[in-house]
Amino acid sequence: MLNKNKMINNPSLRKAKYNGMSYEKKFELFCNSKGIGSIYYTKYSKSGKGQLFPDDRLLVKDFPYRSIYKDSICKTEFVLFLKNKRIRIEFKSQNKAGSTDEKIPYLLENVKHQFPENDIILAILGTGWKKGIKNYIDNKIETISKNVKVFYRYEDVENYIGTII
Image (cartoon, rainbow, N blue to C red; front, side):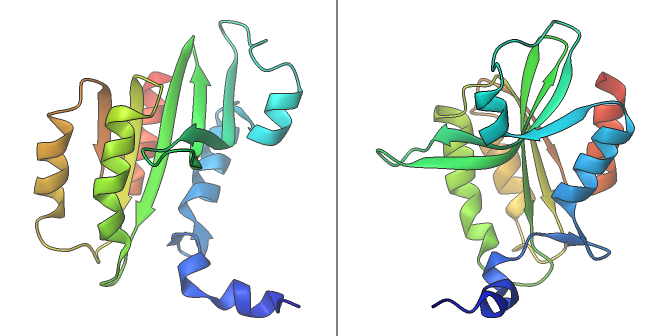
């Protein structure tokens, strides 16, 4: 039998935090405050997926995609449906040295080859990243023929979304 308390206390399972709240939850609440509804993909896929009207705005959580690894289905935090666009949004955060920065090449390969959306937002947040990570990301983004926006401060994500809704 699994001890649920141990699972919650496992640092590798925690969401990135911003003053005690996950960035993902903070972003969802921000979108909700702008009149954008939110729903988990599991409910979205059962409730008339594809039935959105052109002016509909919806934030779908835990949106799946087929990863670069064969037969592997993964999830990103969000896909934002906005004015006939699908914008995939991925949050990565690291506030102390660790292994999250080792996930960046994997993320960028999925952005380039697997994410079906042309518009993608990457929020690379926190101060614990290895030196040179921003330069690495910027160089890789130049090789991707999609509209990829990278933000290194959470506030910049909100400001950008505020300008496009």
